[in-house]
Image 1 (cartoon, rainbow, N blue to C red):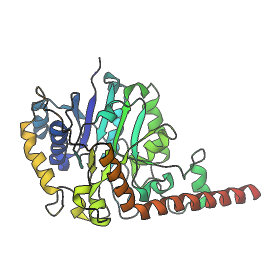
Image 2: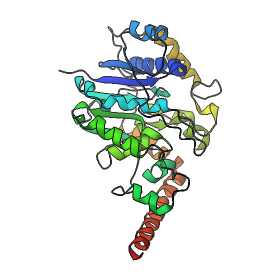
Image 3: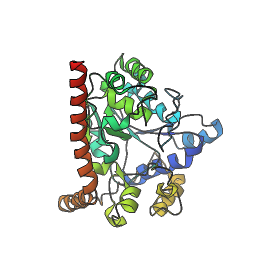
Length: 327
């Protein structure tokens, strides 16, 4: 039987983050599959640590050189390297689970291992619509912009690519070619390049994971004032939010820094020949439902704006479509 594969991505500046991620999976998830680092521009001496730990290393290049500098977020082309996962060589595994290196894994990844197709969690509510994954190039009018997305409902819910899983059977001879075509066409349209491309490729072909598998921990704690003890999930995610550095878990001022630091230190003790028992402290159904209620309550304003945005956008799109037909 084929093994499952756990993957993260790092460049030269993100190696500690990758070590911490692998350590949190090793100590908390009881992962019995293989581990892999997608290495983008990492020098060979630094890769010895991963190989010594029996972590597979695959050197990758950016899938597309983009510079999405619009707005306050600026993501390097490195993030597009994760699309290497959809090449035919990954059919050597059963299920492939990708988790960004700015995450902490607290509990087993059982649900991800059972993925039949492609699964991911909804993006955080402010950008959980495909339209908000895009940006309109300068000097392009609205009708031309809309025409570029013909065949896609821009009000459709979008997923976040910080955590996703797929059964390798979805990879076929045309998968990589189709990703190339999408990336070439939408190279200048994405705020988050590979995230837009993946949402377009898997349009109406993905399963939504519970929010506990991609919980934006610092945002919930600092922006929504949810007590740290209630910010609990299978995967805690600490993405950049504007230019606020303290939201990253490796910042000493971050509320989750001690947990991140302990995981990093324990990375030296990883021994893939001996897998420790997983952390089974994940709450029972009653407590889980209570925590979900707390999360929903903390995000009630975002949910209202999310659904209002969908309704408003549908109205604008219908108006634009009617105008084009009338013209």
